[in-house]
Length: 116
Length: 115
Image (tube, rainbow over the protein chains, first blue to last red):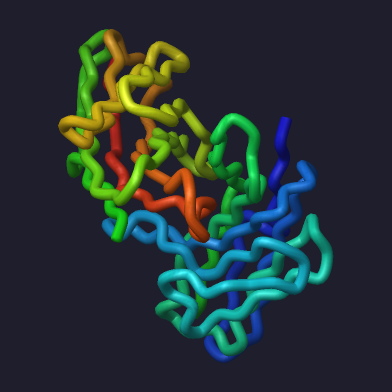
């Protein structure tokens, strides 16, 4: 089974702190993604990466950065956390050129971040 | 651009009732279509998928048929259980082009099944 793990299930940080969210996958997937999930807005893509050290902005990258130094690990960084970044953060991974057009993404359990 | 529209919830049903959650999409080319489910406190899990027109995806008693003529992928289940209570997301991805690995999601539909 594909396993995507995230470093924390719940996190509470103060405004202005630097926050690191870590994600690890064990399926040798090339693609990794960070989403945030908010009520009424669904899932919105923050950043994605299709290879080590490669990244592309998603729909809402402002206030976030990412790091991918190893294939299995993708980190989301909030340089200076703000209260409007309180949300559920979901990591996902997938193959870049999957067999049988199977483009599904595999998700981690999520990190609920509260910024006070 | 690509978009997914699914019926707004919340949807509340009694156990053994019939479920339909509507999903329509807008996309260029021939997307693959997915239903994901999110149980309380968990991440998203793939429920079923269809990669070409007229394909039917099925899993755990849920079904959805890829209808290109109506650009729809409605989720159905004949008899829901309390354990089906969750948020359901419809999603698509392109099958070709530079962004064929990006998913576009609907906003989700909360289903509550009462005993």
